Image (cartoon, rainbow, N blue to C red; front, side, top):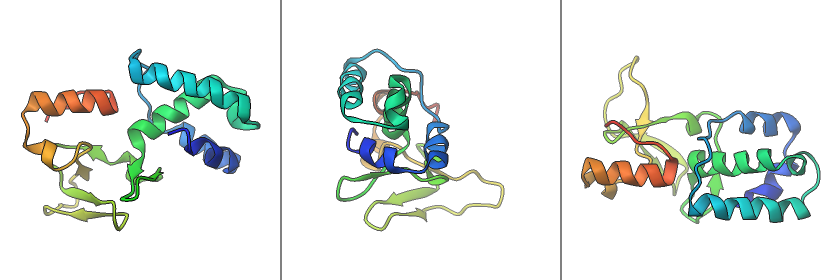
Length: 146
């Protein structure tokens, strides 16, 4: 996640603002988040410009990336203006293909259907509701009601 910070500060201010308006959960206090706080404090020592102005903005950016970014097959991350807003479902109608950076329909989608994909991946969808909810709580800080 810290690797995104140098890219973020090179973006035009309007894109930085757009990204910082993406959804991010309230900051829970857990081991992962405590580690992120440490990264933010370290990053502030090395960054200049808009991102360095506020530890709060840096922390929000890291949380936005944590819960909204899509992973590429090579391990890189990306935020998409619209794709980052597609809702989660344990019975999704889309699948994200990291190797081609595309969403693919896996079930028919009617005009008024909401688009959805699983935030937790295919194999986890076969697990119990409790296991899926636990995974989502840890990775995306919410509990689904699928």
